[in-house]
Image (cartoon, rainbow, N blue to C red; front, top):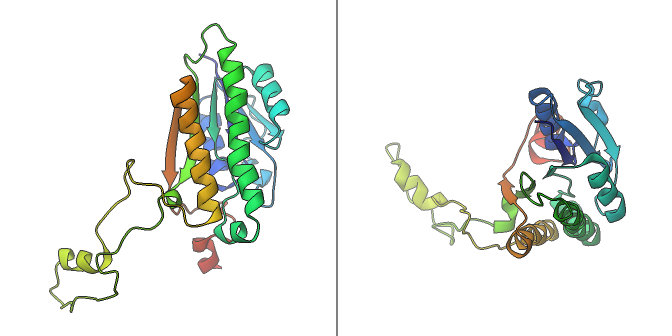
Length: 230
């Protein structure tokens, strides 16, 4: 079955891998890479797929509601994988407005355009989906079992449970309370809430997933792992 999938932020680090996967795995799908091409976007990441017949690149700002709504109509979009975001904590501290605009208002623009287009179809939301990529930073930081800094006197035979007493043994869950601590995480938390609100209010099929310290090929060098490597 032929489908049209928009992948926002497809010229970025994670997005380029997702685009490549979909282009190669689903030759019957139309894969639309939508990216504003900011400093972190690089079409050279996708040289190996740019000539594929099921791949198309569209330069666009996700905050441009009219342009994206027209794209939804023209391409008959069935699904959106939303990776486009401002994602650097230090940059968000210096310029929180840009992060709020892109991450919150940009996500809302996509959601509203998708809602208006999909609700105009006879089948409405059947076979449609909005997949939102978020971050574990919306949850804040895990609490330490010894927040005062006391470290048990480990021995060479210390068990793993003894180590956990010092360094924590908890996890984030889907039910974990949101506790963003930076403008970046606050903007992503806001976008998460809008995605869930469109599901609860309008019945839009949505998914929210939370990434944690991704690293690998094509990652921008300002991030932690490539920064240490370089």
